[in-house]
Length: 262
Image 1 (cartoon, rainbow, N blue to C red):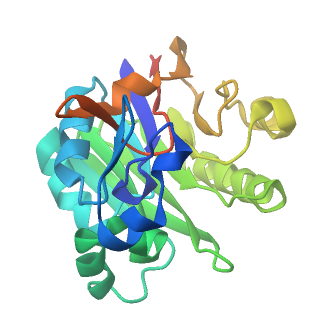
Image 2 (image 1 turned 180 degrees about the vertical axis):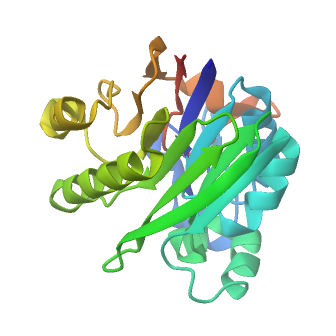
């Protein structure tokens, strides 16, 4: 079994320029594009741009977080993938918030609501499960997906503070191992923990056989029952940039992490 996996936090479908001076209240309120010598910050719906970038990358399974719920079917269609979606936080007023986010994504920001979306190319999904790990202050949910090939995928967006993220990651990993049993497993997502600042990844490797963490990143692809053929690493910023005229627009505030397993 050879599989290329990718994890990416979509930042609720927004762009994030390298120059923080471009993130202005003028743009947020009026949807005006801000520019410097190399980049633009645009306050508009970027679904088509995210579709093209994601569809153009090489992967078999993609673990997405902070994905606008309204995007799931379109992303799957653009990528030729089957899906497993679980809603996460701030989805109380759908579809009203989706309409507002389409019109002004920077103003509503994360209040549109979010989801963890798992995309699978060239494989049949035979089982979908979810586990609610936390309801307050933000709803955190593990999405567990089993493919006909036997491969299992666990997709998580953990809470921000380490004090919340670490128990969520431990609980999610244990449940993913229990559900996958002896089948190969990829466990990943935006875990919100850097390996340099936490011992949790050493614990996951020793007790559950999940490895390896991504250096200097909070986004990870850990595997059990699979050999690592291409060590997961974050992509350079240019890989997620699209050109608007002569200026680059950088999608998301997270770099995708990709790796190979067999």
